[in-house]
Image 1 (cartoon, rainbow, N blue to C red):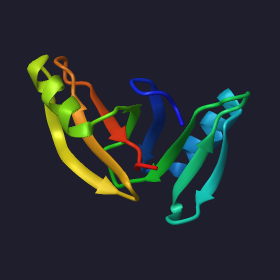
Image 2: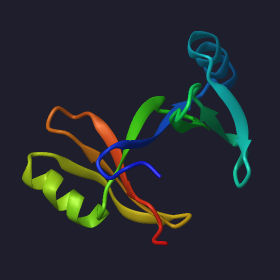
Image 3: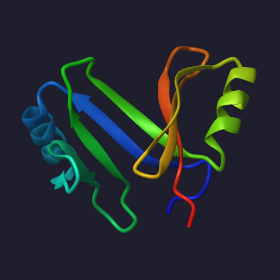
Image 4: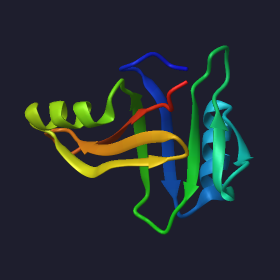
Length: 120
């Protein structure tokens, strides 16, 4: 697992998944595979090289997006710290598949995600 306070995941949401896969595959050599739990609606992205970062490609009806996700020790505490530093919590803490996550805006309005992996 990626260390705390480092990027641990990224997601691209698109209404044109085939075009996005072709673009990123040709440009960067990324490969794509169905997520075992979500099927073709969510594809796992693998970047090349030892220790390459993984991410996801979500078929969405919009808005299209590219979001990075930072691993944190405590999602709730990090939300409070983000707000104290001038950011805004856009999507409050939720739990999905054992991950505790939230979406945050930085002071310039850039969205990113934070998450705490499941314990254990």
